Length: 347
Image (cartoon, rainbow, N blue to C red; front, side, top):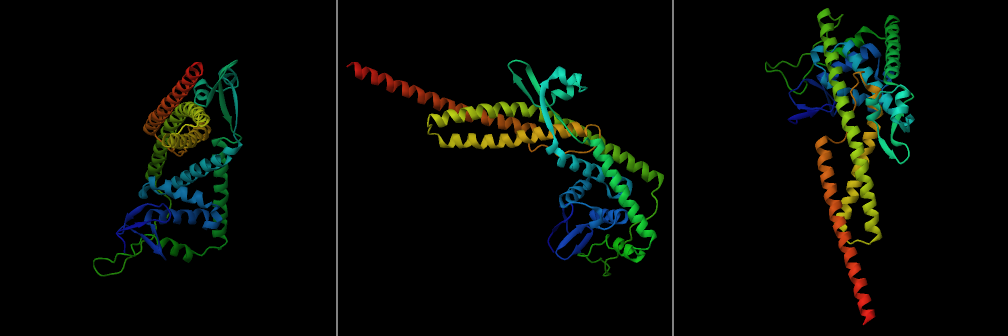
């Protein structure tokens, strides 16, 4: 048995002594097994739950922030709504359209100055600064409402199946009794591992209050993280756009002059590729941040940090400087050749 095990659902690496269940060649931690039990009890089988593979994996990864003691259906349901609504908005991002208009126009349309200034901007010689504000066909509030309605429908179906006797109590007990096991480590007394049945029944008022506080705390943390991410995205897209524009112009100059500086040109090309990826991530993140504002739905982080942006800016500037110096030297050399040719002709 390896010293550590990786859960197939949340992908966490945990000690081999951690409680869980081995099935075939895979291992599932106790935390995820408890969640599976709750999902099965309230939404039916995995097929009936309607998860995509990516959505299910994302849900279990994000669920690790929840404490096992506070795992009740109200808390889990809140997390499902957040995950599914966020994913739905991301899938709808291709329906985003952005019009570049002056700030005053957007303000007259009902947008706030602060929100508009977080979106990408460009300078127009006639109209000044134009802001490209994305307009979504679906808001986060609408997405959450849609997901909640779908969950309610699934809960009703499962409840109806229970009443009709389509799911036997024996099957449900078997499903619940398997989760709290450490199959790979026998008990010290020599007895085999015992299975604990998951607690059932209505959660107490104290448990509900604790779950609500936990959900509010998680939502507050998510909102703060989203705001920080949006600020970084708004700042970064301006810096990256400027660097990409200057890098592209410099690359064209180097190609036209047949500059023989392969390492620097390769570094510049790699910097442009990275800058394009980061800039696209910023542009995609800004409308999502606007839609998720105040909802408590945690958005994915940008593929870079503020420190990464500083290092990237510095490194790119150094490469650009090296190429500019080489181009200048090449031009001086060509001028000298022309001058020498003129002197030779006069002689």
